[in-house]
Length: 114
Length: 116
Image (cartoon, rainbow over all chains, first blue to last red; front, side, top):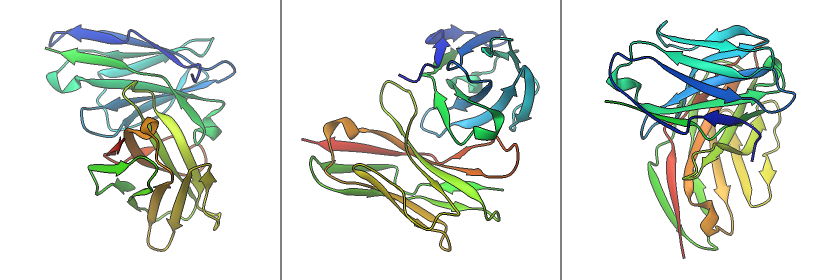
């Protein structure tokens, strides 16, 4: 157990809908990174949040957005869902933005878009 | 751009035997980190081993060791005395050591099956 929890574990949405995924970081960690893992592929970096602000973003469109709260938990929001958004979404927390090389992953949220 | 390539989509090994998973990467950076992560059916990504590029000595963690060849940009994982619990997807990953870098690049993974 890493102490990083994600909810929900599974989610089914239809195309065009909006979804919010949640992540609670490990105690004492102020940095959360989000990844998308399509079936049969490795995770792809979406963005990172540090102390409630976005701290870097991968090659994802603006309809992928996030939030980080004062307790350092985080949300990933996806608007206008597309079929290709079906994937496992992983979050990972690290002690600080400078220590992303030591990060702990949650078990992910499996999103299916129909 | 940094890329990570795992050329073995699937591998299998007999219990108690040794297996080596391959990984190559491409970067123009000199300082970086390399990782092997394990993802069992539970989906949680677990760090197996980490190597800092400035360290010439290969990292080891119990039954897991790496062969880091910086000039060849190769980073293979050796699992000794394979156990049934080692069955999982294994991902090689890369991250530069630049200030405030946060982008970890993953390979496509190798599915390892340990047979009894």
